[in-house]
Length: 342
Image 1 (cartoon, one colour):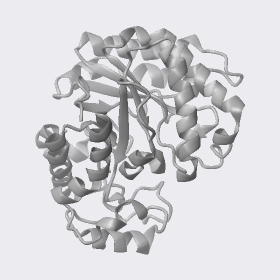
Image 2 (cartoon, rainbow, N blue to C red; image 1 turned 90 degrees about the vertical axis):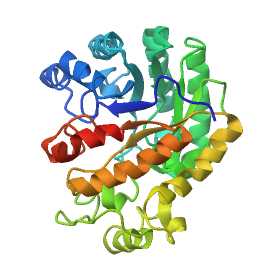
Image 3 (spheres, one colour; image 1 turned 180 degrees about the vertical axis):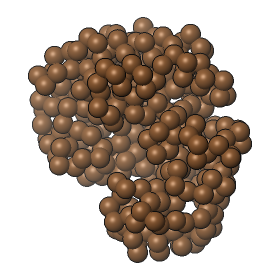
Image 4 (cartoon, rainbow, N blue to C red; image 1 turned 60 degrees about the vertical axis):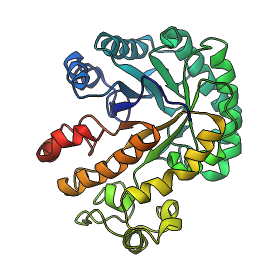
């Protein structure tokens, strides 16, 4: 399996150009140049920048120049401080990972698909010149596994359009089930030798998302430790939020959580990446700021060890706020050790 050179350890800028009211005050103040300077001293080599389409185009699909300028500003800051960039399209017209009603038509609507491809054509024209330092992530977290084949088809058309403009840019592609590692097997053979297979890892979700207000039926006062047995996490998942959050780890119910758990959980994806000699990238992972800091650190130590063992590149979620911001006060007691585990 090849390495994703230059993108080994990263951090997400969640909540800046995505998942927020994208008004001028927020865009100008949430992330500034000093943040990028600070990140450059955290021991990472790249930043993943999630971007929503509303920043870049109006309701009719016409480009908004100011939105591209914010991306350009972020890229230039990163390049100044020696950081590479993953440009992640977090939301496109007709699809976003956390709104199934809004997203119900994307995989059946050719106009929405064409708009998605046209947006990438504009992004490639603008930022493809940075092929040594800027990678493109086609779309964040396709959810429905029944759309796997259609997603491969749409992605192939998008890749072909991008390649006509940016032949040397790394393109990052994930599967369904919110980019679950168990969905890497759904991806087709790589289009060319500059494709990266992507997954996200928040497992066991009942631990990493404990008390999360956006998880259906999750009690705000629920707490759980790490490590525990996988069967314990599954029991709690079924008791509180099953069935739709339980499926990724049920086949590992005989294990204790720890390095062996992540080793086995990633194994199939590693074999596929090895088969195609494709880099593997975990574009998001992390623990909510409701979890015990010491338990959080143990989780990071375990997943980090397996990332390192297999040369899996990654980007932690997230830099600030967003319930996962690692520079927040919740993480201060473990902060230095946490940086060692990115």
